[in-house]
Length: 416
Image 1 (cartoon, helix red, strand yellow):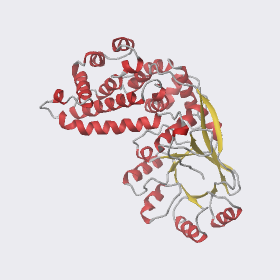
Image 2: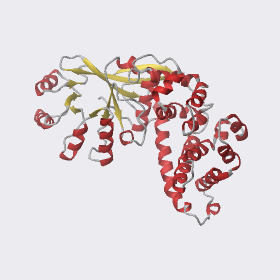
Image 3: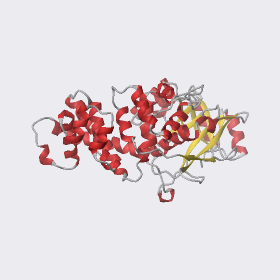
Image 4: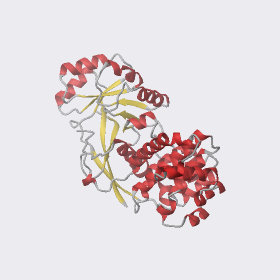
């Protein structure tokens, strides 16, 4: 079992009642957040909160504030949590005048999420983002009274609430009260307190087949349930997620009901976040290559008009299964619930799927002569390959478990 950590800091109203908690990524038992990648930190925080600790244990029945990076805001990375009892903080390094970000904020707001602009710096070009926001956080520790008064007066023109963060003295608190702030957060009230717990490791057996089946449009709930049930740790963590106060108001006691409640898309996202990094005795690059192959196969299949792009994704994803599992591909394929077309593609590169997979592998490995063809695919390879690599990198950055916090080189604190 691994020891896991996160921190939480209370948020108070004007009567000094705790009305929410901000949840903060922590890689180890320290006050600071050692972060090499914001997407990874967000992904790990989501997994720790919803599948290991349980949201109700961390925040009770008040909202949890969770920091989001740009890929989550614009939909490049899935956000597998419902809007109940969570507030989404837009980090200060996200460009608020970015059209993709604005579209993402509008979409998240329409879906019912509370939108919070963190460490907000008022500029006229950021006003469209204010129209999407429910709450704005302003740092008060290093802001003059005149500047703070000026920005509060401007923000009161919008339909939103204000939170004073980094409040460190009684004088600052009284000033914020006088200015009409609605909520307060900072060392004057409470430092972030560290929470630790134990994580049971999921088995790597069945990992890629399960991901593959989740990408199969013809897979039914019973098939998914049978595959997930093989990993009892994974079952436990999905049940924790389904029973989170943010997901269900009543107890969910069966895997079947959890799958019905969460939906295939959400389950797929959680499983990627939870279990892809379970292949600990193999280089992470193998998982990255498998993901990139899967994505490139899918992209080329869609552009070429192949009938089942999802099957092409599955073939690419499983193409390194023998290396990852240390078993012959023939034995693995025989034990998996795969279609004959995918089996032929994996074993002998036969059929349309197999031919496509072979071309993707040839391009990946630089076998240019094998790719000499008069069809249009050759012109699509570079763009599809780069897009697939970027997609795989984003997924791997999120799910990679940080095993050696001392080796991290970039230190970033979210609350001091």
